[in-house]
Image (cartoon, rainbow, N blue to C red):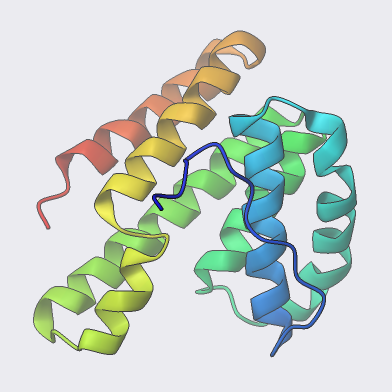
Length: 156
């Protein structure tokens, strides 16, 4: 049976590491904020991300941390800060894919295809751009358009 794109990620109670829990909260918050359009349902996941994010502070290269920070700012309505975090996330994704092109490890490619592959990033950015378009200032929209244009230009 094919999984529908509108289905929420499966609920979990146990996690291997705080990065695992942070990734799960990002998936759930993104789903409720951008796929369902029900910001209120994302609240508990955003609050949990805010608790987990100080643990990620020492790891500025972490993709999940950049994505979580962006979601927290977007939830709070701080679109400018969210756009800055989205830029950082896309820079990290680009760097990851450049590294992947140098060495083709099957394990690493599997991880990337589970959420940071080309199509997933484009779909996620399109949903976020639609949200920003109605609420953000023109300078923030221009910044996000730059991120979207860079994501479209990736040759991987």
